[in-house]
Length: 429
Image (cartoon, rainbow, N blue to C red; front, side):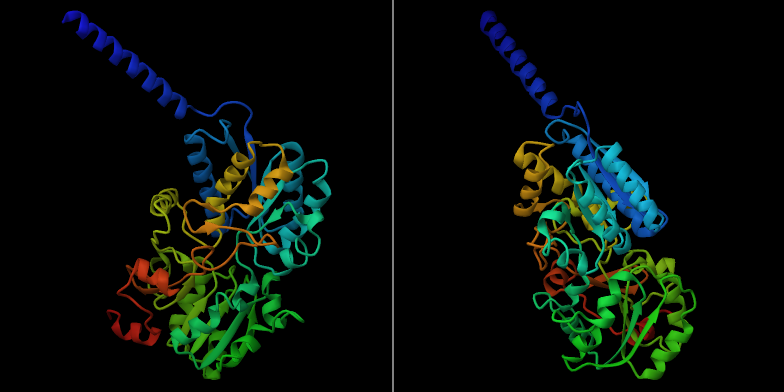
């Protein structure tokens, strides 16, 4: 009996030894030469700071799970301060000196320059460029699609200005129907990516004004503002006099806190406001504006949408580190995982051409929707792929999804869009 007990005891000891050994291997810290990933971001802006935090969280998660093929990932961050020469210098440093396998970039002006720089460096310094945050149509339509061999290293997991016209998304038509819009005022930031919204693109799409009017909505005002502007009351006066019942603020760099405070005090305060991106996306926008953001509709809202089991835990980490969900966050959070999947698919961290082919053919799902790229290396759009979501600030602690319908039903099935004039009547005095 004692001998049997001893045998059983020895077996248990052996089993536990093997179990813990295998566990330690599975959770072993990555070793060896790191795989370098670079980020060039405007760290002084909310979207840039949040992109940095998002990528740091992603890289930490990858390293905590054993790295990529057992190797650690190292993130190297550069600040371009919205100065293109600084961005180019940072890119050359990351690719040539730091030997980054991938560089994440942002901003249409910088990305155009960095694509050209990258195309020159590609032969001697094979690498991938992923643009977290740029919407200019020409960046992919006139480059990757028109000259694949030169620009095949470039991918954009983000929206395009052309997405506004995309019949698969039908964004403007559906949204303006939802809002009951009859007369619209367009306020367009004077920045690179909005140029096609003003002028259209011959043979491709009309101006945003002409596109909207195809659906029977009268555009009664088109005006532009500088991204650095701080006085918007004259613009709101023009909007109020135009007879518009809705305004679209097209852009991402304007100080939305200032816009909201002046909107709430202006003659246009009861005119619904819908914006493409920016600080209005933040969950605490009502607090940031002392309640002046009531009724604002924002693209990419920082609402707890459970796209995947990792969505809410990621958002909790992001907020704990001082970040907030913005348009640039999705690609920043999932970009390192897109690279990880491609490297592990080809089982090689140096064969960049094979990695590019893997990115072109794979589908990756991490914290948000499923990522897939089309022939121009733009993200495929439409749920369950890259999704344009709009939320509305309906109270100090109430921020709800209003479109698209499948996301609204997933997140807040009992809440729908409410016109700002009704919200103002309902607000505590």
